[in-house]
Image (cartoon, rainbow, N blue to C red; front, side, top):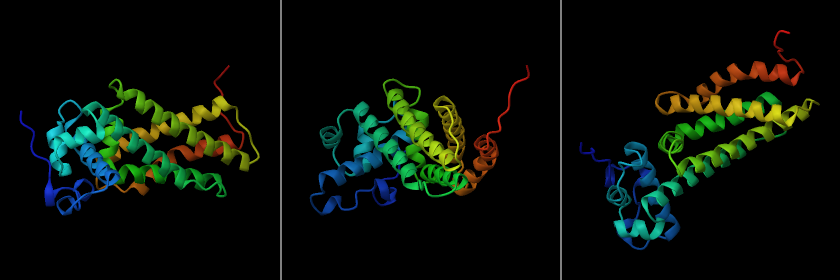
Amino acid sequence: MQNSPLPSGDDAPAAARPADAPRGRVPRAEREQQMLDAAVLVFSRRGFHHANMDEIAELSGVSKPMVYAYLGTKEELFIACLRRESARLVAGLAAAADPTLPPDQQLWRGLKGFFEFVGAHRDGWSVLYRQARTQQPFSVEVAAMREAVVEVITDRLDGALRLEGRQVKPDDLTAMALTLVGASESLADWLADHPDEDPGRTATRLMNAVWLGADQLMRGVSWRPPA
């Protein structure tokens, strides 16, 4: 079945439209970002296997040989998209952090930053979470991104607990971080499919689900299985 055309030219999303392609030489770094914007859009809508370099080049406003020259094969281009989107995500989480805030506000800011990223980069999230996680060699890139996010969350949880004068075993901290990341990923996948949903409201939903338990743990209260 023939793919329906994605928007191009004046109808393309601003992120994927070459702003000054007809007016002379565009700096390489800017041109690469335009190609990556277009590639993320095409990969998210078509999937890796059905995406083609002709469409990515057309949406970028450049020739197909230029895409190959700048970013390599389709596989290399997909990996470049993964790395850019994961770097954006980790940077967004780091920017949302403020270790001087109370623990609940630290967690809230982290969740809100995460869901705001997904809300602003739905195509990028589709590439990261849906297209790449089950396909080699792309799943390796996703695993590295996830590990980086877990490290950020673990560090934030550790800092919050220390503010409360408590210390938790490293394995318990990692388990808490993995639980948060897993729940966040599932809810983010839902958010990506609901463009009318507000990222802040989504963060509040998850905050309500996880904070009561986290707060209890910070106070030294834990559930134990029956003997």
